[in-house]
Image (cartoon, rainbow, N blue to C red; front, side):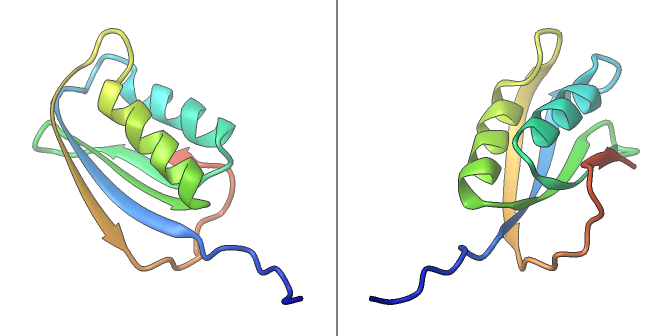
Length: 98
């Protein structure tokens, strides 16, 4: 029998368009990402969008992506851009705001 190895972490950049600033979106992302055990950060962009860079087990990254697409109650998501990137294992825990 082969030895089980942990899966490579998945890293993803999310850019969220819509009513996403001033509605608790970053706090929502932080709570969700921490609950999923993900590393990374979330930040407001000067263009009015929110950017998320997250890394962790693929199931957790997928769960965060689905949660971000739905957003918190006062947000209105009009577009979500998802870009996979190479895992770097560079983030300190916990997931934070930049």
